[in-house]
Image (cartoon, rainbow, N blue to C red; front, side, top):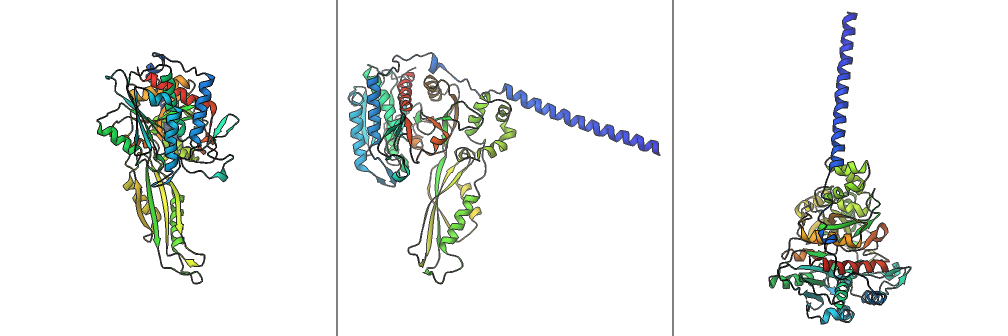
Length: 511
């Protein structure tokens, strides 16, 4: 008996050891597979660099001190014009007219050139047709918007429409969104025309006046005009992304993100209606209390993570070669580590927006007097939908989270989902943008990505499938909060880089 027990014990030990060896072997094989994928992973980082290297520009961007002074003065003057869009259909029409006059004065070569045709669209937007010498080359479209969001003067260090310059920075509403693009595009063209440049490839410049409230008058009408003329463009370049510095965890290099898609927007109204009465005899729950509870539930229960189901996956995969171990292994194997990355990204608002549909309570209206119980309460909630998230699904989730039939849910506004544009090696628009970024910002890592805001590009879907979003500016972590926030600013050198980018981009497009 003792002998058989000992033999049985030895057998169990051998079996346990064999199982442990098999487990360790499988883990080692698994780890080797991860490492092999890590160091052989190729997301197509190199791309097609012909547009950056094989076609040197006819005109170098060696702007004179006088030219730099003039372009800076024109930019500052544009910032001082209060082209504020605060709500549908509210616009500062006088300022919009003034801005149009400023453009004609700031860019005389553009407005007098025989190759440029200017049209005013919907009273305040602008369409420029730049005729190239080679009609066989398909044209493209550069877009931007001249309206800005309101600014609360008391929150700023300087008056928000003063365009004051401090320590190398120009402060003013629109420096980042989006007057730098409006002025930079036209300034680049102005400088080229002054040098006797004639483009080979035709292109259009569309400047909308109401992007901040949806673009339904400006960009939408510009697109309608082009469509009515049978115009089909190779690609569009709009605002919506930038060069990020110190924003992506684990990466010290600047990252130029060319957004190949964007989040669509949906605005939902929440309404609660109850009886009114005197505040001395309140009911157990009031309309305000019921609605506040519903809003609180939405804020405490964010939408589900969808990381890896949209263009944000391409962003992180393209960054893999720039990262050191173990981050490079994590990024090369998102099929395994995706949930971990999601949890890391959702800790900061700037990166949480890549992970999911975001929820923002933007308006709350209730009450008429301190001693009167409000008979109704209304709230507005704005969602920016992840490309994989559909409106019908969102509404079901909102209803489930609130779980209160007393709260009426109504869709006030919604945009259809935006398809993803190509970033393949043969995608001319993407590679042209990428090559020009390499010319002006040679140290930046360039990657496709997702625009987390809503832009005017949605209005141009019927004239091209290739919609890209990139603004040639560098944004640090603290700069992101300045967009639509207080103390919006751009460095003097930063604006010169914007002009350099478009000056080179227009020439590169002739390739």
